[in-house]
Image (cartoon, rainbow, N blue to C red; front, top):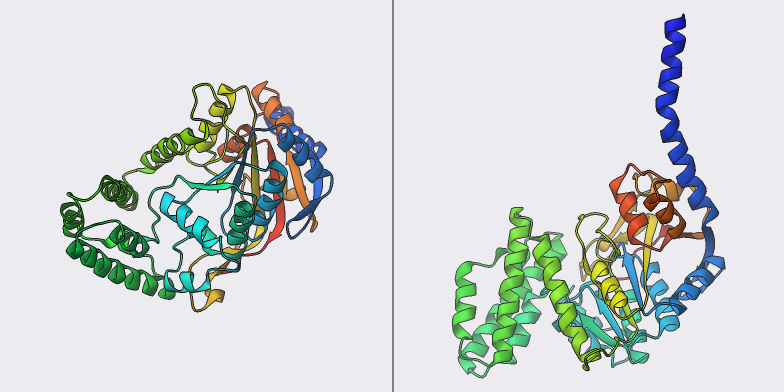
Length: 403
């Protein structure tokens, strides 16, 4: 009996630290949670007032998201109105950003453009995302893309390259190839397949591309080299060669290059900037999923270098629906359900958000406790959240963006 009692006491002693950690994390999250009410792009509540105050103290604001939810670009519209950024940096390539800038000069949605080339604006092919771009353009905010050449844009890319070459025969070849790639990708969008042209392109086609453009303008040759690098990154990802780091390095180089004109004089500070990328990219420390320093870390370093602040906002849905495709004929097929409420990194927040209201969690007190050794968190993704983001905006039930 004595041995049994001692065993129970020993086990209770082993369990005590874990219970204390859970209690500490729950207490820190609960005491730093604030409600937010969202009606379209209009935000109110204590949570929004907390974020507004932090935006007012920040030079750069970074929104990390789970893609394809209508509420997140609407939230970003409110952030953009508050920040009034000079530039918006996002997860598309430079050619998509140029097309987005051109298209948003006209009213309405680019229905015909996207019917012909579904997904060619990536996330901005969706209604609420496009409306965000329209607002940013109306605010005279420059749209900047730093991603590799978009995986859904090969037909459009070849067509644009054709407009930049002088040789008539090369132009005709590029137009033929681009039309064939677009037709193939459109069939993939409609069938739900993923064998996009950029992944199935033959090496001989790449050799022909480089050979036919070798005597063209520096701009055309640069486009080709950018595409070849993007192609290698995609192919290596498919083969499992771990080219994610190469992709992130490319985005960092592109970011530095695109920001240079915004501060042309040595020592001149960068203006206010708004970033919006997937949540893995916007953390101030290591990426919560990839475990590497990403664009968000570089942005914080740039802010530090000019004695300014970067504000890192994580915005995700607990459950609901999101976009899962680019079918141009049957939009209902683009909507998929999701439920993250039981995932280890989400559960502490989900348990504190049982109702329909949005919740804003100020993560900074938990981060301080973590760094000071007063809090231990077992899940590495949750640790990445706490170290990488200042606020977590949780949407209890998200809905898919409009196709």
